Length: 253
Length: 262
Image (cartoon, rainbow over all chains, first blue to last red; front, side):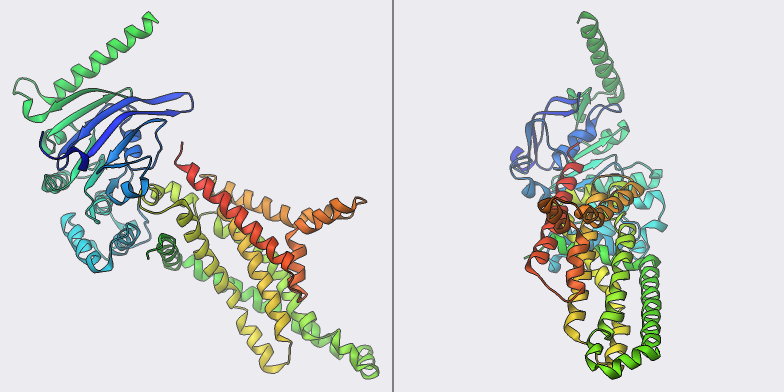
């Protein structure tokens, strides 16, 4: 495997409980530095919970995760400095203009003024927002808001980028642009993308991790997929298999 | 050194002045203060024109010490403003943190290198600044008063310090209330309830148990505010305001921390 795993993402035996419900049952995986990995799973599988733990938003009930070598439990501040996160709903202050919002994010992330302007221009350019820099976010379409969300995740050029459904609400042309942008991160940033769109994983990612019912049930290198077996077939077969195994265990119990 | 609370405060103030609400609130506050000063002045004028009062003044000039502009005008205006703040501040604070939850911007703040204290203090400082601007609108009338009259400055400073501290307490209460719920209306009700509770707690002070009576008296915000309004700055009142501020800001910080610990 290429790259140094300590500069990427390492997840050890994560467990998360919400009251009586266990959302994650011992999730472990690794994403080496510079790799782009797709995080797949049906609705309610635990994708967002895992991502929220990785970004320091939630604390795990058990286990730990390391982002660029820092523990989310012990060095949460260091983790948050090194992470860019686009949640499922972009976190936008809609009364602000695109530029002032991104300037706020840069300041919040602790980026020095000297390089902030350069980062801002780069993020606006990369996300196709240069012509919308003075627009108030509330007046933007859903697609543009999604792009602003993406821009806030990358504007401080973090080593690790976590994207929760980054292409939701975008038109095919915009999806293509976002794909290009994500591909440009290869080798420079470690990226974890959660999505329902399997073709997106095949197009963008080097590897797919499939989570179901709070457990990692499969890992697949995209280059190992053959013409005969698409990612969709792999996904459906492992999820169905896990579903059947889960049901038979419940019956046996 | 970077202080994330300052970044959050600046954004909050900017956002506040992007919408017309801040200007409307400031305008209404200045209007209400204008009416209050005008009425108070008229009352004071009528009082002095009263022939009986004029006779009394002619007999004993010391009587002027009792019927001065401070006790007649400023104290009345600040007292009504105290009630105005008690009612108005919850409307202002109800959106402070509930909006962060609804807009999912909590996720941005809490995945950035800033602490829960930064979030609470940033919001608090921005609200304190707005409160200061509201009270500053009284400056117009106070300037006129100093221009044409000869009021004592120190009791006025004390009254406004008391008003500002009380306002800060209502802001801290409102901030706490907005941190524990998703709904602005619920935040509004909770801050109203706590604010009114802080005032009416002294109503039970007229009882036969001296210690309890004393405690209820001391626990009431209006008791400490009254001290300031009379021009008396006591250490115990300062300690009271600082303690209540720390208590509600601390509780707000815990609520902000708990918001993502589902």
